[in-house]
Length: 98
Image (cartoon, rainbow, N blue to C red):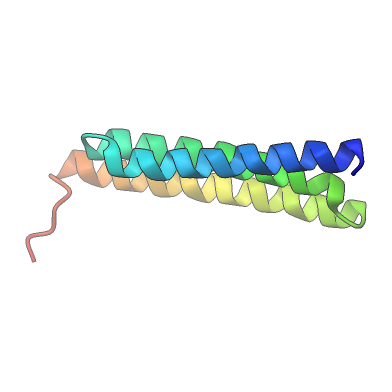
């Protein structure tokens, strides 16, 4: 195993740990705002670490750049979704009456 493969493995494992921590935070936090914060932050860091772990293993620079673009798009989408959920919860109690 080369140093690059070991570094990639460490980054992938750390990213998986952050995903697990975010999932546990989603279940364990007391209210919707702290759950939302725990999930979005941990998922963004987890995805970032996984992308950084996969980039050195990409066959060429174009594939590595695609991974970076995916990371950026998911981060923007996650932040936008979290903002919309929080805005709805502040305006209203967030629970549907149906």
